[in-house]
Amino acid sequence: MIVARGLTKTYGDKKAVDGIDVTVEPGRVTGFLGPNGAGKSTTMRMILGLDRPTAGTVTVNGHRYPDSPAPLREVGALLEARALHPGRSARDHLRWLAVSNRIPVPRVDEVLELVGLTSVAHQRVGRFSLGMGQRLGIAVALLGDPPVVVLDEPVNGLDPEGIRWVRTLARQLAAEGRTVFISSHLMSEMALTADHLVVIGRGRVLADCSMSDFIARHAASFVRVRSPQPADVADLLRRQGLDVVDEDDELRVQGLDPAAIGELVGKSGLYLHELTLVRSSLEDAFMTLTAGSVDYSAATPVGAPR
Amino acid sequence: MTVTTTSRTVTLDPNRNVPGVRRQGFPDAVRAEWIKFWSVRSTTWSTVMLFVLGAGLTVLVCATSAEWLASGKADESPASFVTWGMMFAQITAVVLGALIATSEYGTGMIRATLAATPRRGTVLAAKALVLSSTLFVAGTVTAFAGYLGGNWFLDDHGVGVALTDDGVLRSMVGSGLYLAVLGLFALGVGVLVRHTAAALSIVLALVFVVGTMVFLLPGAWGEWIGKLMPGNAGSGVATPVSFNPDLLEPWVGFAVFSGEVAAVLLVAYLVFRRRDA
Ligand SMILES: Nc1ncnc2c1ncn2[C@@H]1O[C@H](COP(=O)(O)OP(=O)(O)OP(=O)(O)O)[C@@H](O)[C@H]1O
Ligand SMILES: [Mg+2]
Image (cartoon, rainbow over all chains, first blue to last red; front, side, top):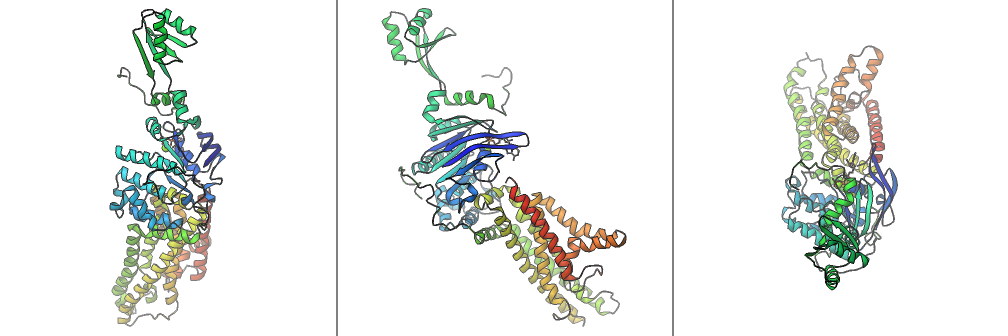
């Protein structure tokens, strides 16, 4: 379990993390989502005691990370930067990590096998592709068989097979009762991996809820109704207590599914030309939620196709 | 590890890996640093260079100067030649010392290091121990090898120096000590500036350039600053008879040098302890 209370980090006059209160529970995958520069990596560095919070606290299993008797056995982390010396072999990298935390050295070969790097274990990591480096980072995170796993953009640079592998791994780790905290800026990826979501923008928590709540709350859906008698249909539906918006020659109805709407309108003898369920994508929902807090957005060129 | 088997929901004791595990200690950090130190090529190369420069140049200069030293025209003592190459071996000690700190910052490794061993004093002390013990052994062995090789030529011309002669044995062990502390100096500066090139420039400039130039300062205080500069104070212990008569007594100078390096390391520790990784 990871608990952050009023966690704040200021770099100069820039508030990278601004009073975050988050509890990451064991037994489920918690997705940590936010646009570039939202403060995800900074938060994770503070969890690991690498950066000192300007204010507030963050604890892992009830204590500060640096107070752990053997931190790699308690928290496994994949950090954003590769944090590797290019001249060292993958095996040597894992070996010194294991030794520093009294992890039996045979475990090194076990995790190499697990991430599929056994055949290149003796190669210098400077020659590794982005994806191989990422796999080694995951091997590092799993080295101590830790009950808490923190992964900063683990799918970055992975091929589709690798992405699916990380997804399955994360879900399995959570199913084993571990605390799994994964950052990403891809809503679609998190929708498939996470049970719980923490969304941040400009260092503040914008949403902290289960994935299904998030979908229900933010991925707004409505039924598009077209009719040659729009005013009558709108009247009819409003009398049923439904929320009806008249827009662009169509009615947007919320509060009832298409079948029920069709039956209502049919009983009253009015005509329908279209009846469609429109669901905005999760990606749209995420964009809408974080729209006000994007630091680095690309300008859309004038006249570009949308 | 069970992640490759079918998933099952169990309640995991969040501390299950921790009780029964003894707290990671200084020896663990030292072993980890030792593996790190010797698993990159730059360490092997630098150590080989240390030996080649230190012993090789000593032998070379003794071989070429023996005749002149024996001629009676020489105004230098033969004893000042038997550790001659160590002057150049210093450079590799500085490189090793700087790299053990700066290579971690250049690559982002420092985050892995501090995640594995969050106690920063422990990390710094482990690095210092691994570096200084390596340099002490390499420096002493190199100085002996240079002495044995170089003295063979000096003996040949009847101007050889015995191990029992004044300061000879001291200079062998002193070479190891001087390189060890010089390496620590570079480590301290490396932790402070975090860039390889900057750390190397600062230490090499202080030891080789500034250390020589301050003797040009006028008056008694100029002479004292010269005596107290790190390279000047520390290197005396590594030569049986110094080329430079203005230096402090060998052990006094070495004590001054060690004090200066201890101060640099203390500042480095205080900064390192508070800094974001
Ligand atoms: N060491 C630092 N010094 C100064 N500013 C920093 C530092 N680290 C992060 N920042 C700033 O803090 C903000 C948050 O950065 P952070 O890396 O935590 O974002 P992020 O959510 O991980 O973004 P991304 O999705 O791009 O990885 C950014 O504006 C960044 O410029
Ligand atoms: Mg990031």
